[in-house]
Image 1 (cartoon, rainbow, N blue to C red):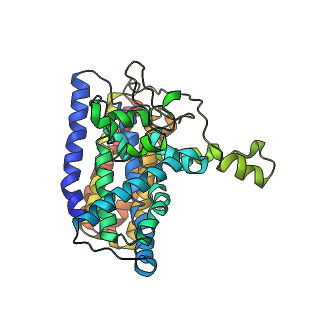
Image 2: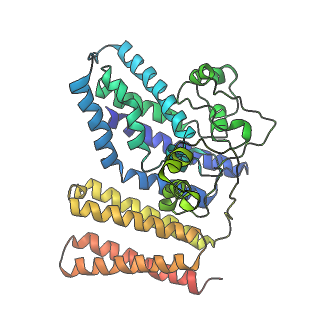
Length: 392
């Protein structure tokens, strides 16, 4: 049921994002920058390759508790049970989300989603690698009171898909709806780093939880809402984005003992002092932007082919794709950081792929696929050399 829901939802999500990009461009709203957009896609893709692991732990633990520890088991053929399941999930989401924002150890994980200085639909794809794994703990009480796993899976997907539409600046305030449900206006407040917006509006579908527990703030259209985090990133690398919060958290220079680490670092509430990193979004050559886009499409095509031919079931091949995806994303985002070493790392990556495909062709292993990838890699290295050495 969940896969069918996603099958219909994903094309709609993609079209909505394209529509937002088009409107932003035609109206010159500057809601997107290429570098930020690509960074969001890279972080989203990185989190997806960890999904098999996080899903195994999160769903497996939920099913185990439901099977052996549930106080009562609710039927799945009653509409009221599905409604209760959705309300319970959204209530638990509020508290999970609030805790992730409140304490440093959880904020180190969740801050990945808030690092962008822009606010658009691509932000919803910017999810931390450990986010699903840690967040899943907060929903285990639902298993304990007997909400069936299928209901949990469906309502969590509905809640997630709903929140995708909240990440936009094209929809203004919605009057009475802003008081009851989570809306783009309410969510802009949540992502805002203005002092009056910090730690506000945690609701996923309903905003009534915030109103009831005192964390609601209305969007003030008279002020310019700023987005980002209080200690901004200085590059677009998806690995760095996921580690950045922990690097800040575990800076041991001023720590004298373990107790101080626990009390003053991990469970210390977040600072409200905000700095904004504003990277140059139009400093790269257009050919570099085009090259990065093509390489990302090639990566998606490779992953899609592996899934289509069920090559992903081979653990060795899965590990190769896993590592290669991380390497590719790091190399491409290094190009966005406008460092010369980024080009050399990309040349090394493409050369390595040429060597691997050459060996595969020689031993007649997946010959057709290897030839196609070899030719693409050959074109890529010539293209990259032209950008690096010949274009001004």
